[in-house]
Image (cartoon, rainbow over the protein chains, first blue to last red):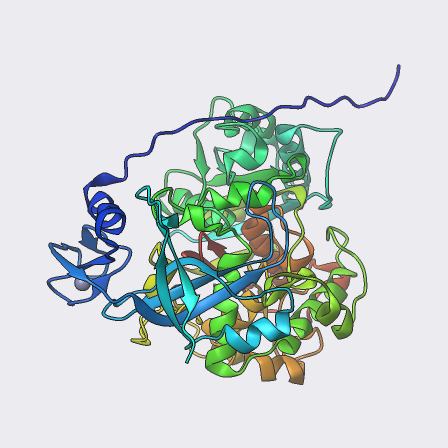
Length: 154
Length: 393
Ligand SMILES: [Zn+2]
């Protein structure tokens, strides 16, 4: 009897049409229609949650009030990706969590328009505490990728 | 009061692929080893907890359906646990709850992982992020840990050198673990010169993708007495804690829940220590098996576990405190950095900690272990489990 082991190749290809829900729909429409970033304020702890949520996970209450936050902020965490992962963008790219002025929590997005080819040079510019601005895409679809961050030059 | 102890342990050698067995057969291998270790048979198992993480990594939905009969689950209650990386820790806790309920006397906690059958692990792990706000920003299981690492570096002055020390120690320890996946000696320079994956995480700061299985038999004190078993790892304390889904919620500068620190682990550890009657973990814990898929994850974890002050893990690694001949050896098995079969990785931590308490850890045995701690961590540093194992209760 042959001891050759056989293989069964398979591929998953599944489609979804996810509902953004009421809260995220308001957030994405504000980005798409007015280039505004909206957070939700918790009536108990007063934090402005970004991305906006309909509840505060700390106080267990619903958030009700929309708050327009600033289009500039501070980098709270970042990474620079140099590895190609299948199905993910072509490297290098930078991702940053930014605390926008007036928000209480940091929101993640790509950090663009900075040369990443030399890591050490990139690290001279991309730092926790560095100031960034929100830049909107010209053609917006109501998605998180309608905007990104860019370093503010001082 | 009912007490519970670990009476049998089974692990397979962790490897890149196993093309000779399917997922259930792999879990069966570990089960048979655990049964032999405990000196009991399939019919003694009263219930099965199946430790199985992401379905997409196995390429099958509800893959526990395919596996439970292979581990003796037919005609018995079975439950599948999935908490991401924390799966094995939560599965062990679920097994413990079965015993503490008084309804069961002998429970098998078992699982297997065959993530080597897909090349798409990180695109699958990108799917653990919500489709509305975060998934499209290309976050995966590596760069989610980079955000913690970079904040720890900024807050405490931790360096890539400190991270490299963790890798070198883990690789060295793995050489003495017959089950470890990656077995090779590396130097600090090798780590620092390895290619950047998601800065500050480099290749040797990362765990491998491993295939393998682990089984742990948990029994009641009554069952243990009847069996006449002497070498037991008693479960003396457990704790579990969940943090927010959004990592950005831990970057609000209030200092209350900083993503730099493993705050969820700190809370879980405090609960587990209290239950185990441990007041000074630095002195009373003799060895730790920590769920840390990246070097930087371990640095935050040892601080959260109370092995050193916040921000001092780098210096403690320089001093060799967590080395095999140090004051508090961490990951004698080589840890997650040298074997990461996701579905059972946190269960392996429990198994290795139990082996230390039982005095059955072979060449990687730490001398005179009375108390050992094992951790699990799942999601974006979101779910934490802590288990304290003790020689006596
Ligand atoms: Zn609140």
